[in-house]
Image (cartoon, rainbow, N blue to C red; front, side, top):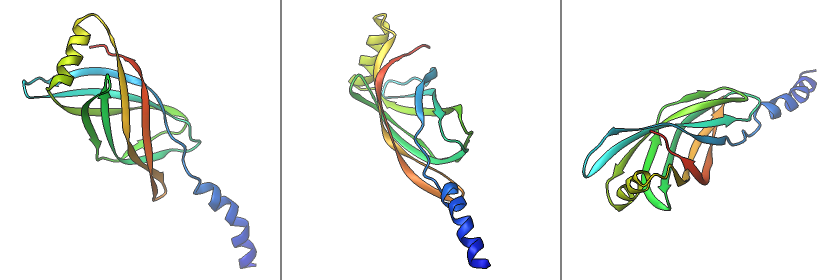
Length: 149
């Protein structure tokens, strides 16, 4: 009887341990300069994603390189656990330390020229999972993004 119960629960266990799917990138909101310096500045934004999974997941950490107009802009790291609701949008707060070299100056010139769009590329990974099982999930995005202060 005990063996039969185990075999009956096996499909339920397989569904519960299903690999989560990746998040859909929706855009950047609330872009702001937190601290401006001649050598280094701090930029903050909220990155909006959609969780297509039928269950909530937890993100334990992430490391993402950010490129603007195909030039390295900065690296952001998330080291706190965030609960992500099922089938819903969510915002990830991002803080970037930006080295004010030619890349940052080029971005400021682009924005000062009246253009409100830049080419953004994200490349990194996040640790997502549920029930104590976590996997490294790649983060990849390329596209034009409107920047509004």
